Amino acid sequence: MNSPQRLEHQMTDKGFVPIYATGVVEQPWSSYSDADHETWATLFARQRDLLQGRASTAFLQAQDAMGMSPLQIPKFEDLNRVMRAANGWEIIGVEGLLPELVFFDHLANRRFPVTWWIRKPDQLDYLSEPDLFHDLFGHVPLLMNPIFADYMQAYGRGGVKAHGLGPEALVNLPRLYWYTVEFGLIREPEGLRIYGSGIVSSKGESIYCLDSPAPNRIGFDLERVMRTRYRIDTYQKTYFVIDDFEQLFDATRPDFTPVYERLGAQPAIAAGTVLDSDRVFHRGTGEGWPTDADA
Ligand code: PHE
Ligand code: CO
Image (cartoon, rainbow, N blue to C red; front, side, top):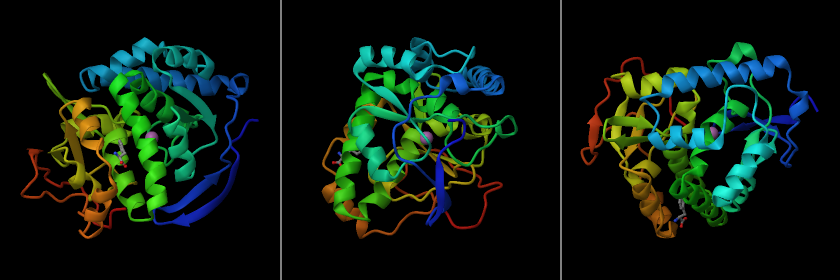
């Protein structure tokens, strides 16, 4: 198996997205080319370098602890031995983005789906869908952190429940994932640091999210985040900052059923808006922001 099992494209509210076979696949490790391993090595070295002093200490330490290295594309089985022993998470190979319920169910059972294929050499800086580098380098290390590991499982369980509650819940919950798991910032003694996977796997956004005056950096507030639209095609207009993973896990512990009801009656907040009630770390200048609609 040398190419992803892409079945079709489907029009959604997020644009035209590819639909993949949803089954779990064996990582076809021996079919990776030299160019594939080289892409991994280049991206790994580049991001590790850039992320010193930018990524959260928890992320950098976890990545070391897992034994991920630039030498070659890691074997899922090797990482799984470490992860199972650490806290019972494992990674499974998949063809690409999964339907929501399938994804939630994997997380609820402490299985993290990782796309088995890696981007081509001309896509080092940007790719519109998750590949092996984003999933493995970006998402997997923090699963070694005990609190974050539990948060991810709780999110999966919450997703299964939200799916049963209806479409409203499935608008609000993914925003939480987007602004934490994918694009979250965390406060550390030396300053703001990155823990979101979508940022750590992107050279441009690793710099932009901390250094640019353009985006807002706002204190995390559960319902505020769940009301906020986001961008899928550009850097974020707003980043939400947590104090620590305990804060995130504690805020998301209560049953969301009444939260969804409350939120359903309130209008969504545009991605770039700052509210009077926000705890503002930095008010963005909005420089260079696109003016078309957010997702
Ligand atoms: N407490 C949430 C619920 O009842 C589940 C959840 C936990 C969601 C952690 C996201 C993150 O739905
Ligand atoms: Co991701």
